[in-house]
Length: 343
Ligand code: NAD
Ligand code: 89V
Image 1 (cartoon, rainbow, N blue to C red):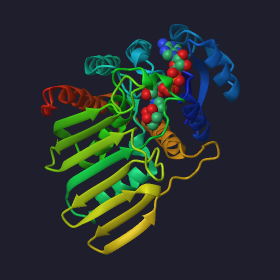
Image 2 (cartoon, helix red, strand yellow):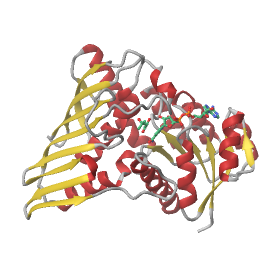
Image 3 (cartoon, rainbow, N blue to C red):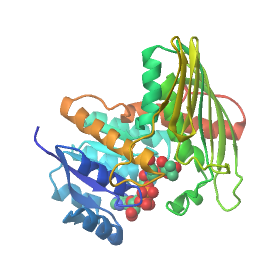
Image 4 (cartoon, protein in one colour):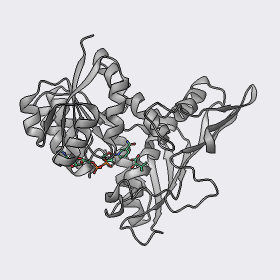
C-alpha cells in the first residue's frame, strides 16, 4: 500500500498523543501540521520534525495534497473544519465531542456523505485494551445474555491543569468524559431507547457539572447505569480507569481497579490482569488512553485501506452524541428522555 499522507489540525494538549501514535503506525505519515496559535505550531512541528506548517486550515487544504486530515481542535471549530475537509474531498477524523450540538453533528455527517468522504470520530475509550477484553468475554458467550451493566468513572484527578477550558464551560463531565462512558455502554450493551439523568456540581470553582448518574434502557432489554464523577476522592486514585460490571444470564464480568478482570461463567471463575502496555512514549496514568489512541488510528488506516466504515464513524457517533444531548435535557427536566425522537 502507498503511504497515506495526513495532516494534523490542532496542535494542543492531546494532539501530541495522536502524533506519537501516527509515528507508531506503518504506511502513514503526517506531512503537515496546522494551528492558529503559532506557539503550539512551533512546539509540535519541532517535536515531530514536520516542516510544513500552517496557521490557517484553508491554506493547509489549498497547499497540500492529502489522503486524510486529523482534526484535534476543541468542539467549537469541528463543524467548519469537517465541512472544509468534505469540500476538498479529504477523509477526516474529528476529535470528540463531535460537535457542540446534535444538529451540527448531523450536518457534518451529511456533508461527508454527500462528498463521499469517510468520517470517523476519535472516540477512543472503547479501544482501550481492558474494554476490548470485556467485549471479547461478551462475544465468547461465557456469561450468557447480559441483562445489567454499570460503566463507572469516579475520580478526583486534576484535569483542569492540562485542559483549563474544562473548568469554564456550562457543560463539563457528561460532554467531556461521560461521552466516553456512554459510548462504552453502547459498545457493550447496544443502542439505547431511554435515558434518565441526575447531575451535580461539587467543585465550586468550575462552571459545569462534575457528577452525573445516568440510568439507561437498552434496546436489547438490558438496563445500565453510567456514573461519572471528578469529585470523588478515593484511597487509590483510579484516573483514568473505567470500571465495568456486567451481569448475564449465565455469569458476570467485573473490571475493577488496577485492570483486574474477573469473569464468572459457565466454566467457573477466572481472574486476569488486563493492564494496557506502557508504550515507549507514554506516561502513567495516561498510558491506558494513549494506547487506545494507537488502536483507533490503526483502525482508521485499516478502514481507509479496505474501504470499510470505521466503528466510530460520524454516523455511528450521532447515537453517542444524542445520549449526551438527552442526558442534559433529562437532567434539566428530571424526566426520562427517548432517544429515537432525537435521531
Ligand atoms: P487544546 O486547547 O489544548 O488544543 C486545541 C488546539 O487547537 C489549540 O492549540 C488551538 O489553538 C487549536 N485550534 C483551535 N481551533 C483551531 C482552528 N480553527 N484552526 C487551527 N487550530 C485551531 O485542547 P485539547 O485538550 O488538546 O483538546 C482537543 C480536543 O481533544 C477536544 O475536543 C477534547 O475533548 C479532545 N480530547 C480527547 C481526548 C481523548 O481521549 N479522546 C483526551 C483529551 C482531549
Ligand atoms: O478523554 C478526555 O476526553 C479527557 C479526560 C480523560 C481528561 O476527560 O478530556
